[in-house]
Image 1: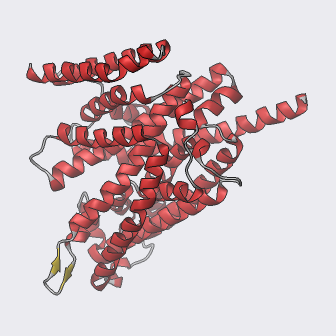
Image 2: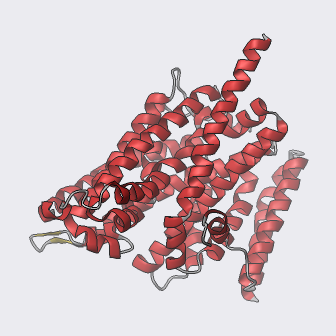
Image 3: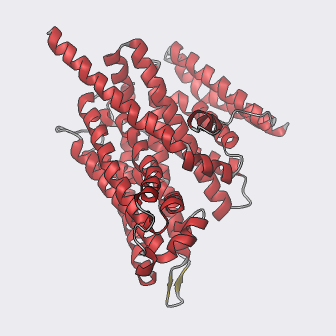
Length: 69
Length: 369
């Protein structure tokens, strides 16, 4: 649980760091993209600390490129 | 992307970045991978990889000269149209992301197995990524200048390492030459060609920032040649000092090599020098990959700036590095057997097709007046 709180706090910190500047300069598209990426990053990081099994991207390469995989 | 397109680096800085990034992670992991196939002929594999690398450099230079001040991603979108251009861009971004994962994995593995075994890998990667993000946010000019500053330090320390190891070199370790025929040498050349040269496709993202009045062929080729030669020296030194058996069985033979230095029972265990050299080269390679990834996504989505993507992308890289590297044995097997083919598809075949497409679109434009 403390790890999850740390991840959420980190994401909140990143939002606090970036979002005000984007809002002030009226960069709406940039803000939307930032929020989407931050949500994805936070969700995956939360999944990692909660020990949810995440896809191993190297295994995908192995599946695609190895004939005897 | 105004904030970044104005940033410029000199041709010299561009060349230094290519040299440092082409050495990258290869300085530490290549000798063992090459020796696994080529044994005592690992140095011959490196010569072959260097020759292939020069051809890859020629391909990248041909593309760079046709980009005319645009980056790879923006040129793909403008010249190939929105659908084809975006598809090509996404494929390049996938390559940058995967390349970033390999570098992060190697950094984490090396630090936890050799230098800081009791520190959690997450903490090491978090600090490494933080430095990369800060360097990115300072901009291209700052990290290009930093490379110029660190390059003489890197070369001096490498020279110290080579000079101190020379007394321990045994020429018999090179024999017999090509005893197993050309097959093992060619197999041994593929991973260094992939890790050292193919992945340098990232340099095409830096092209708009190079203040060059002439073509970029010379800096790219000379960067590849110097970087490749330094890698050849390191691999040859590993064979000469450690011999093929020790080289093949150790995960980081270059690190063992540095531990072997002993001058008059006074100057010993200089592996910290090697760790420093490795951190410099991996840092610059990761920085170029991270720059390509972040600015590539911003250009693909036509965003006005890319700084806000740095932290979320860092989080994603961190998560997938940890998820993708459950243990060093599985990772190394994939890196040796499968990853070079991935690199070949995304860093050579895809740019070659892109070059053909650039040529055809230009021809069509000329015909159309």
